[in-house]
Image (cartoon, rainbow, N blue to C red; front, top):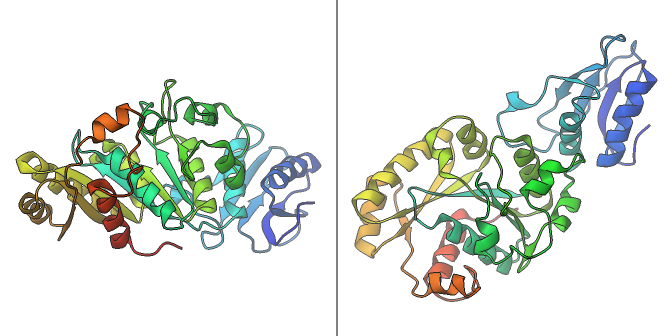
Length: 337
């Protein structure tokens, strides 16, 4: 039973009904499945499922982290045991992760304080990356919703939003998800809308970012400020992003917020990059106070707010301070896969 391709999932069971349920999941995900009887030794595979008790539809799950596409969050969040059919979405997510290697560079952008302009920079960064030839996805992780959708002028465009993904029961397959999202100048955008956003701790959020990472070169996450406060959101997303861009203003407030944000990034292990909306002297002062070495200076771009009101999205202008800052951040990040 199974689909073409190399072996990715092994199931040890003598129950034909359990084998059929797992087979439907692997067929949907497009991964190979080998079913072995209860008296056989389990061979190595990306995902090994062991049906230990014939009287219960409970499977013990072993995931080989070296052979499975990463899923945002700590490894211990991957399930050790699943029960069918109730845990079918969870098991399907693990099976899909086994199907396609993760290839993307994942970069987070977060505001050190309110009004810093992180969403604007995240959009400009994604647009600059596409213009450089990278297949790029932009993800809005704001729980409130209506952020990037409105900022980029996509609120009337067709495509899936977070509310739609939460309502769907199927797998978030990389190619299918990308094609279902609105496209903004070749950037695939996943955001909330007037119906709301996404709780960063939601399994759907982790599954969607994993799927986008399997199908793109670069995934830019517009992170909520709550990730700087510790807790589950910080463990999941700061740990998942190899690089995080911290956006701050100048002055005493900007310096204090940048220092606190830099400390949170340091605790997570992410490589921090600082962007400061201030003059050259203040930018250096904020960078020194934050301990991040240097900052990319984002000069004030006149008419940006008015342009957004007229439908001109961040990054649409190929010249100017915003585009220059985004290009500088891309250079600091280095090459993507």
